[in-house]
Length: 475
Picture 1 (cartoon, rainbow, N blue to C red):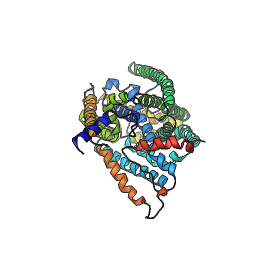
Picture 2: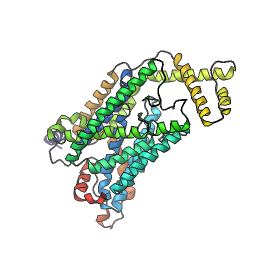
Picture 3: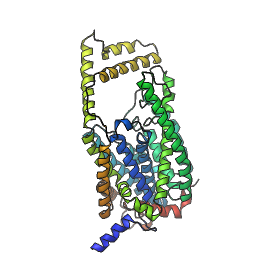
Picture 4: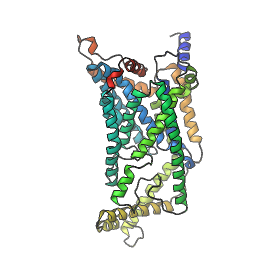
């Protein structure tokens, strides 16, 4: 490729033509906002950590966009049917395995961030068949996950049976809800400008009201805590542990309909989806004009390599969170030391594990057991926090701005020369290797082979499907 061709290609990336068959720029912009929000949730100053816009909503937006992308990638294969549909679903499973492996790696090399990629992989594991369902059935599945899934998560939480991918901070039912909502967004919102305008107006106003409500609720809860008062049952604390005065049924219902981020409660999911719809609709509208897409190019570049940007953030976050890591280690040491001392000294004021077992064994009913259990952990947390050593804390936005500046510059320059980010290219290579096992034998009719699905332009395939065969998904 000569210099003039490179310049022409770079210009088309920055200022895409109106009839471009490339990426859906609004979705790239939305992905960038999700990444920025997640970086803020990890690196924002302590005083901003309770802002509802950066606590819970960014990761939920990321999950919804994962569902949209999954539906886009599967659309051509679903339309063709047969081997093409099988290959499309197999491709999504391979992608899920690779993303899951990346998530495990990131979780093993740092302790400061709960990696969202494991739950994103769950969307790719469980939801590919849903992309082939009729729209009516997708809606039914969504409400089942919303209502029954939230109830099961709440029940497991109260029974103490929460496992990885089931409980907080990324409840499985919530993330499958977000992925299913992404499938519906692809079908109804992505290619309809009228729907985008209506959706943005409705969800935008509702999101503003919800933001005001959550901000005021959090402020009231913090004021109550600082004044020494007890948080009410309906308060918007960030803790998922039920009040010790609540019965099992009260705790179950409170968790089931919880509005607190990352709990997987019904209200939490609906709040998050409302904000996600507003953001996606606005991004699609902004990037529809060529000038809008051009002005947003740095953010679009960041969104086009969201996986690479997220990995860079997680691996570099320890530089800015070192003080918090020290605090975790100090807390761990304090907990072990105090527990060991109390266990060996029967006269210790601290409630040891053996004494705790004696107390809960004497409980006559579930409510009494829950009260004694919560009292034990409340005392342990109070003892540790009272004597916690002074450690570094996040007191500025420097870590956030440094991270965003680095990934923005990197993505802006990289996208001028390459169609995929480095980790996106690795994922595409893994998909290609995995799909070799699904190659049709020689001599098979060409119509049974999958349509050309290109990683760099997966949205282009879905545009054709959505325009030519819209009745496939209608009930």
